[in-house]
Amino acid sequence: MLPFGMLFSTGPFVILICMLVSFFFAMLERIAFYLQDPFQNRGSDIPMTALTRTIEINLMELAEIETDLVSIQPDQHGVLM
Image (cartoon, rainbow, N blue to C red; front, side, top):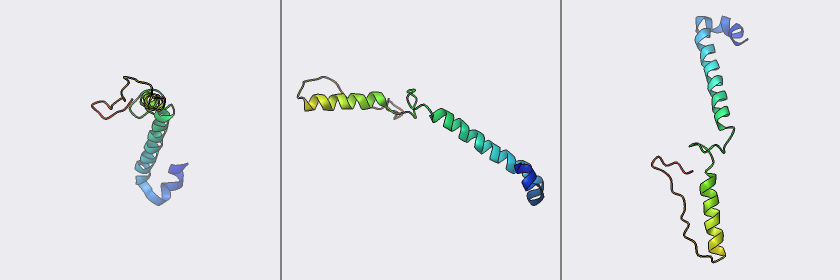
C-alpha cells in the first residue's frame, strides 16, 4: 500500500523510497532475530560465565574461604564471555 499511497506525491522516486523502507524493516527484523536469545555465547550476549565467576569469588571472600579463582578477563577484542 505504501507505493500506491505515495505514487502521486513523489512520482518516480517512489521506487527508491519503498526499497529503502523495506530494507530498514528487513534489517530491523534481522537484528531482532539475532538478539532474541541472549544466552548463545556470542559477542553481543550477556556474559553469564563472567558474572557467575564474579559472584562465586565474592561469596567465597564473604565466607572467608581461600580460593585460587581469578576473574575472567575480556579477550583481545574486548568481548567478555
